[in-house]
Length: 54
Image (cartoon, rainbow, N blue to C red):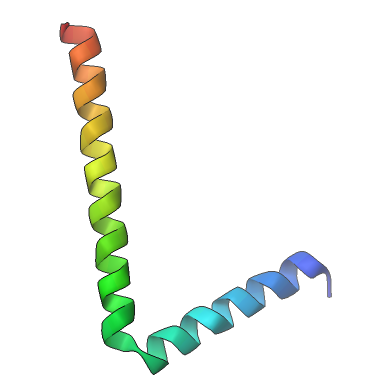
């Protein structure tokens, strides 16, 4: 088994453990990530819109 595949399996195992051990905290973390991505996308859209409608 190569190191990249092993690292991926370990990462998946850690995520599953985190979700099982602390589901409320994991849900909050995912919500924060989604909010960050949405805010970032809106900022990029605002910037691009400003450049082309400037």
